[in-house]
Length: 582
Ligand SMILES: *[C@@H]1O[C@H](CO)[C@@H](O)[C@H](O)[C@H]1NC(C)=O
Ligand SMILES: *[C@@H]1O[C@H](CO)[C@@H](O)[C@H](O)[C@H]1NC(C)=O
Ligand SMILES: *[C@@H]1O[C@H](CO)[C@@H](O)[C@H](O)[C@H]1NC(C)=O
Ligand SMILES: *[C@@H]1O[C@H](CO)[C@@H](O)[C@H](O)[C@H]1NC(C)=O
View 1 (tube, protein in one colour):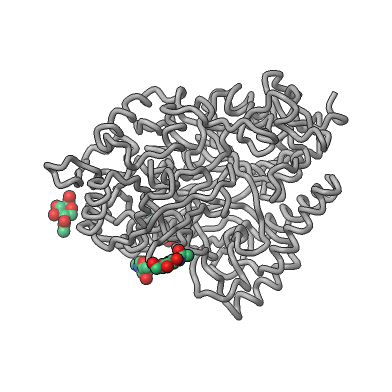
View 2: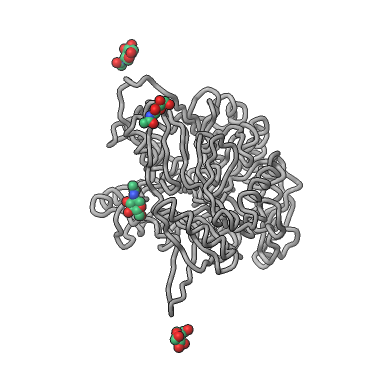
């Protein structure tokens, strides 16, 4: 799992007002693409590099360093890079052009590591139209994969919704779309062949290319990947708004009824948007297009206003303002069809029908020339923009209804507590299926994707801090959820490895391919249960999800936040504002 890459489905929006401004700006200029996450400086012929994730901040806010970065352009170069580093016993990490996952997957230990970028390993190598096989290099983005496949009349049936992931990253983090049908929605379950480069012994020249045909494990360092695709097809999408009062009863059946079903849940508004999304005959008319607003290039000015507003609401504890804005933003999004257009230009209503490749993912802010950051992706950390945590976990289908009811109980006790989540377009619920991958999903599940405000100051509590912490602990510990490998705060990984029946087999393969652990790091060892220290216990650690609080100093006692029991889940220990909790 070294290929990290983030799936940052950030889900954010702007008010309808800004939309006009946005349209105008988009005509004039295009977006500044995300910055290159690797930065190296050479001084006195010695190089120093730093590397970061898409949000410019790891869960513990540390800076990750490396001694240099290389940009191989061919498999031969990659092999020689890995051989040289192996010979010298150097730590290595694989990095990409567009961004990395939230957890510290991309960080090599110490500051002498080597970053191997897949920026130039971005070619589609071969497509066999009759067999549906597509071979790509590891640095190919989802956008490129979808476009090249479609040109050959093929489609990857399920994928994440954000274009900016690379194939290596998709696989390394277990990224997925939404479906309970067929082989399910995890991209790695569509891989039929893999060429990976691993360290090797002196006798083998220190590096080795391995060809895996029967792909059944989450590997690392994949250099070439062959995917089995389907003939391109058309889909029809309709969103329906419903009360969430019977969400717990509906959720499983709904996932079985529609091939590409997902849900957007607005718990504070007691509503959910049901996405009815299925294949339709190829000759059905329609040429729809998705351009999700949260992934569009957004004027920096608008982003600054959004962030300043949110910061003001936080500092004034103004939950009412959050709830008002949440309603505005979610209804603007709903009216605008979540970025769907029926013909590529305007949204005139459901159903939205079109070719799968035009509907499955988007990410307009990913491409385009530099424009000095007049516009950017909404989470771009070079400007004052959105800054948030993402807690993402999957709960086995049979337990999902009870989890939903528990969250609803929390909303009942603190009705305004989740308005902040709606500002990031609610809780996205996607269906995922059991996988044979050693670190894949263990059973059919619903993945809950929750995005919420993060302060720039790690010691500053968030409004209704305790409620989201309780949801996180409910999911992970009461309902035994599996964490998304590429998202989450440290808490979500606490003892997570014990939830995987084949974890030991994963570690066996890892040791065989990389006996010296050159691609391992403190973080990957901690996550795999090979090393302690995943929980960072220190002042204020509960606020950032670095620990589960066990004493008040882990919260913010000077601001009235103390370590307390959960409201619905008594085993939860959360940082709660003392005066508002009983
Ligand atoms: C840079 O290198 C020169 C010559 O090797 C040396 O005199 C100088 O002190 C170095 N500067 C720093 C800041 O290391
Ligand atoms: C591959 O990456 C290089 C470097 O970023 C870029 O110039 C090139 O256009 C990319 N190729 C494709 C097919 O996207
Ligand atoms: C494409 O796949 C088919 C079926 O597996 C095979 O017969 C054919 O030789 C392949 N074509 C190429 C160019 O590889
Ligand atoms: C689509 O094709 C089917 C069978 O090929 C035909 O029965 C149907 O009328 C066609 N529909 C449209 C809208 O052309």
